[in-house]
Amino acid sequence: MTLEIEQLEVTQRQICRRIQFLPKNSSNPTSIMPLGIMPIQMKIMYDRLLMFFGILCLPMNNIYKQLMLLRLTQIVTCSLPSWNSPISRMWQCVQRFNLEEAVIEMLTSAIFPTKPAWKLKIRDLIGCEIRRDFRTTSSMYNRHEICQNICDISETSAGLMKPTAWWTLSRLKPELLIPCKNIMRLATDCHDLRVKNSGINCICVLCDLFEIETIDHFLNSCNAYSDEHAKLTLITRKYINAYSRTSVLFAFNEVNVDTEDMIEISKIILSMTNKRSRMMRAYVGNTGCS
Image (cartoon, rainbow, N blue to C red; front, side, top):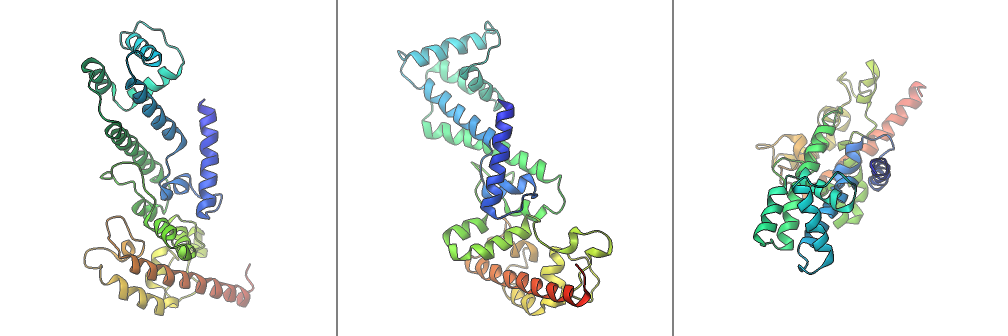
């Protein structure tokens, strides 16, 4: 079963990369995190916990509930040898999320929470674990700080994960798909900036500052985009007293960037990306580099 789940998760990541227009070699966290999609294994656990509660809420004369209570009694009293069955797998999920006491209390008192209350509880528990896993895995990669800050993986978040503000914006306004896609490629480290190169090849060739062509250089200091930087400054100065320029440009979770400002930012950065492509083609043509 574990191998099958791993294969399903590989397929899930491949599909999510295609949805986001990300390259095949993009990192595993960036393939799922920005979309707010639940990993396959967590989805299975979520459904098991829902089914577990649904069976417990059946009438006492229901054969499925009677079988469930019989097995749970044997499990709790350790009178049942280990065995593999749907009930045992559901109980393993209960144990994983430390719900044993809550379940035993329900059974002994015969007082069950409402289905929405139970669903909210397990959403919080599973959402917390998903976020913790993503924070851990994404921290292992270089240049993932921006993606971490725009994805719904904060310790203070509750419930299941939500898509980033940029994918939400592109869903509400499909005409902004290309600008939003461009922002997300920068945020997920799937861009063409030279920072990924080694040695002197990482230096920006479009200006005379002799700086590494990082996202910060591209958006803030490269004098090849002076006009675009000035336009971005007109937007960011409304927020800059409380937040950094980068956090505003990428609409970090803690920054409440206005939708109209996000639209304008995405269009300006797209024009910068297109301008860079033209200048790089000209540079390669002039120098004879490949």
